[in-house]
Length: 226
Figure 1: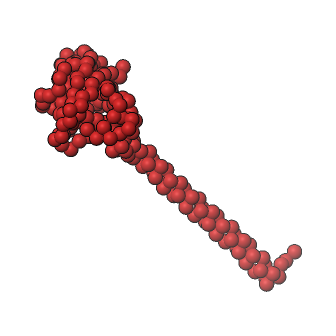
Figure 2 (figure 1 turned 90 degrees about the vertical axis):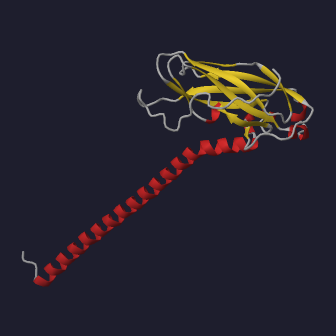
């Protein structure tokens, strides 16, 4: 059967139009998929960035407010001392993966409020390899965190110990006399300062020591009554 020319042309045009419409729809669908994928990628990046920033932001919040017993970091030493004493107890812990013997050199010190005091910890690398660690810290009870100020501390930098090496690790601190204005904290007679050393894995044995302070880099500062 022969289709007249005008009808054949109409059929061909309709078929071409259907193909064009289908291709246009596929292109639009692909574009939508790309837009959705791009948006999801942005969401993933933003969420990853928020997760990465959460730890330092939380740490900053704790240091500013003393939340969770986090001690304050003082820009300078105390200049005001009042005639009221409090006992500071020292605690030391080491993560199982770090082969260090880490201990306080004094168990307690009685200090006057506002007095600048230096206490000492000691660490020994009991392994046969070079190891690096960083110390987390807090004070108890938590209400004391806002008033316990550290001026210098080994915990501010990463510490490196060679095999068998021992190091003195001092911390300079004062208890802010403003604690007497806190209805709860002013009743305290004792504060515990606690450190926990955690390992930092190095990529290879000859890892660079750049930006790593020598262990026990804080100069001693006399003060306090043992």
